[in-house]
Amino acid sequence: MQSKNRKFRVVDENHSPDPRIPNVKRKRVWKKSTLLFAGGLLLLVLVIFGIIYFRTYTSVRVSETYALSGAANSSYKTFAKGVLKYSRDGVAYVNEKGEEQWNQSCQLKTPIVKVMGDCAAIADEGGNDIFIFDKNGEKGEVHTTLPIEKIAVSGQGIVSAIVKNESAPEIVCYDTAGNLLVEHQASLGGTGYPLDVSMSEDGEVMQAVYMQVQGGKLISKVAYYNFGTAGENVKDHEVAKKEYKDSVLADGFYMKGNVSAVAGDNCLTFFDGKETPKEVTTVTINKQIQSIAHNEKYVGMLLKNTGKDGYELRLYNTSGKKVLSKEIKENYRNIRICGNQVILFDGKKCSIYLKNGIHKFEGTMDDSILEIVPVFGVNKYIVLDVNGMDNIRLVR
Image (cartoon, rainbow, N blue to C red):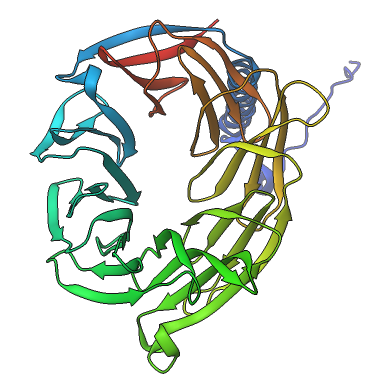
């Protein structure tokens, strides 16, 4: 009997097949598929975001319209998560849904409004009253003995004002209870005539811009006054100053934290420092300034071109670095900086640029724009005009 050749499989009892192998393979396949799907989804989101983010929009779609009482006779200023609506009859805080959060009646012939963070101050130019607000309503009221020319407010509600005296102007500071904190006498031949005033966020340091006479010539000066411990042993609390012999200063303002700036007809200077502000850099401006605006992070300027038509839009950060330069064909009387956006508007026309130079919008609205503010959401804004408030979205 012949034996048949047989194939035998040797089984090692100590190395038997792992029954979990099929499950491990399935998990690996599932993980790989999940990663591929997530990567594809992320790529799709980035493509859609790029299409939305990098294109220029030319039209708007109105999603909601809110009628505001007295809109035709009111002015507006960005405040908290909405706007301040103010007129000769008073001031109100309106949220992005057109709802009045509070309304304060007061008589204001020529309203002056200043905002710092979530605090705002409104005064009557030539009058004697300053009203201080936060997002919850009136925070305090100040009565001056002399007519008001300029005001400023800190993030805590401390206000400073340039008041007109018969002999010389004064700079005064008050707390929210109306108590006089500082009284600083100015003169054209001494300190100089004060043109603008600004407060640090904590209300401890005041910035003042002066026009001064030296040797029969007019010069500009910016001075800082510290009313805390750093200025106790310094004459008039003056802890820093800088003179400009070939420039005419007009604006001074605080930005983020301890950063402040002054702007003149041919320069822009940045300062930094909590107790004793020091010059960071001075930028030479070689064109005529048409409009200027700032927020916490940036200073924006619309400049008239020399030797050719059109304008240049420039944006500087708090270090004085130019982060944006764009040629603009038309002149816009109004410029706003909201977050990383520069908004230009004049009448019905509007143009919006992002900090990185992307031209986000170029078009017109149905009515003359009084204020425009970006709100949460993709391409969403609120527009204030004589009819009230519109919630809009930019579209192609």
